[in-house]
Every structure is written in structure tokens, then in C-alpha cells.
Image (cartoon, rainbow, N blue to C red; front, side, top):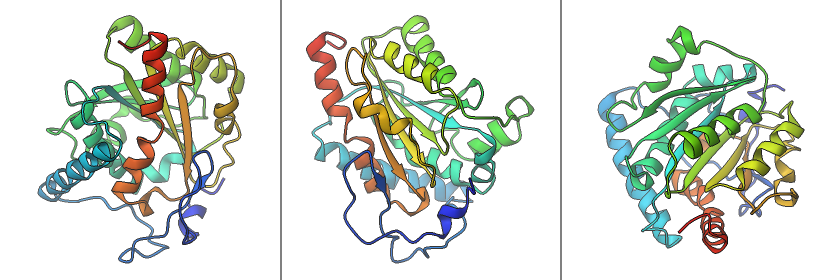
Length: 271
């Protein structure tokens, strides 16, 4: 897959289709369709100001979904396969981290964003907070030899480790909301399926996001995947994450979670 092919595609000017299909919103008027770099703040002061604005934007999304009283542990599982390398180095991954931090600041009981990397295996990283988010990817990933790995794409190892942390190591009545970002098809389809089925017995919800122009055939089976205690996962695609506004991204993230929470309460996974 050519990972930058999707930067060249102009999104159609139409309303987003139903979840589970490709979402390619029109670029904002002040952003060129072929803009090659992620909108990352290069100065800490600017990054802090932008974070404050994004917290307000996320609060509006919560009100639209009637989720003002929701509390959840927030985690991000970020693909670190070889095809993602340019997105780490050009600032896209740092930009995504900065855009997702308000979700944790507002919903998480300790205001931190827990972080995993995954390729052929899974790696837990230091959690991200408002105090240390600036240059997190460069500091903790790109300039850290311990995290200097690139591999294939397997989903099961990171799903299992997420369950290990939140169910066995740190059990809680507070649910966990996992934002799972990948740019490629996984090699471990059967293992990943079984991992998702096993996770459905716990108070963990997975929001999968496909970026780029991969087919994502496995993730498109989530809506019809059998064997689960309850439906515990949702999926949507974005060809170019840098051309999606903050409010659009937050609305997409929150689209399925309320219905999962209601069902989890109905079957006793949540109180």
C-alpha cells in the first residue's frame, strides 16, 4: 500500500455515509486538498492554546450525545507497522494524539490518555497528560530506542494486553473506551476475532478507525461478527485524518459508545 496515496485524493463534497463505510469529508476552505503535512503546533504555547479550544469542542460533542455525565478510562492503540513510519515522522501521529487528549481530559477519571503501540506485538507506553503531551511522539517513540521498532500488523496481542491491564491488573467498575487506529489489514484475523469475542465479556468498548485507502476487510466484519456477549466494537474509515475537523472527529468517535453503554448496563457489565 502506498501510504501517501490518500493524501492526493480530494474528498467528495457530500454528507458522511453511515458508519462502517468510508468517510471522506470535504477539506476545510483554508486547507489545500493535497496539503502534505499534519497540522502540528511547533510551539508549546500554541499547542496548549489549541488543546483548550479542542476541550471546548469536545464538550459540545458530549452535549449533543447527552454524555455529559459519562466517565470512562480512555486508551489509544496506535498502529506502528512499517507502513505507518511516514505518519510518525511527518507529525500526523502527534497531531492525532493531541486531538484525542481532550477525550481523556474530559472523560477519564485521572485525565490521562493510556497509550499502546502495536505491530507484530504490543507495547505499553507512558500515559499522556496535559502536562507532557507536547512532543510526546518524538520524545517517547521516535527518539526512544526501546520503541524503535516497525513490523507487520496484528491486532490480537494489543487487544489481549488491553484486557490484561483493565480487567486483571486494574479492575474497575468504570468502563474503558479504546480508540484503535490502524492503516492496514491485519495478518491475524482468526486470533483477532477470538480476542474481540473474549473482550466482549468485559466492560471495554473498542472504536476502530481505519486511515488511508486499505480495504479493511476484517474490520468491516465487526457489525456481523457472531459469538460475542454483546457488540463491543465499532469501525469507521477516514482516508485523510488531517482533513477531518475536530468536531467531526469527536462526533464519529462518540457515535456508537452510548448504545454500547446502554447494552452493557442491561446485561450487567456496567452498574
